[in-house]
Image 1 (tube, rainbow, N blue to C red):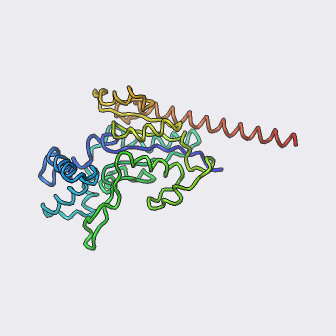
Image 2 (tube, one colour; image 1 turned 45 degrees about the vertical axis):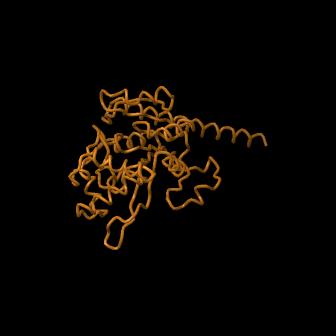
Image 3 (cartoon, one colour; image 1 turned 180 degrees about the vertical axis):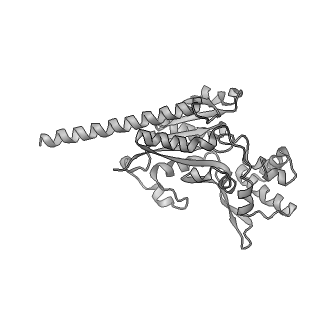
Length: 284
């Protein structure tokens, strides 16, 4: 039997970085303000009843064409290079992985975001994620974005929790995703999942992970705890922390306690099964 796996699932915008990822370089390069860009996306939604995520993906294509900017995968990757991450994020993954090793478990990190996958892939932390589930484009023969290949809205995000738990990580594999799977065969047990998000758009994922025995954490920028008050009032989360990933921060300490607790419970469960099996065999 391999090491017990613990999955840490993250939203991206305002969870790992300080604002919406398009606002660092992408929107600035269009010579637009953030309110202008998101306003045009909202107008598309209102005028044509277009789903909000598809609307912003459409506006990204439309505005790049108008400005003569080739919307390629490489360009989007470059728009991720200046994303501003919260304090401690750059060293977080190595520290948490090392702590998992100390506890005898393996930590896997995943992104589940309604943001742009190609921008996330351009950030310096992309290498730490086993999978990045976020909105993606398909590209034409010139390498320019043609149409959404994947659009993930707030409720669709929950699908990826099922995928991660079952180990069905290929987004095109719906057959195995929907097959009945014995709980003992899961890649990561639900009670060994930790979801970290920042607000109302994370509610479906937070609620699902919490209801299945995992842990949900809501983050807020320093001094803005009121942003997560609705999540506390509605009992959607287990913990609330400032968005600070630095060593010995409250978030760092809480996640390490969660990992330690999960590791201990797994060892206890394994020992219980072992002893019961030995007892049964000795009395055959």
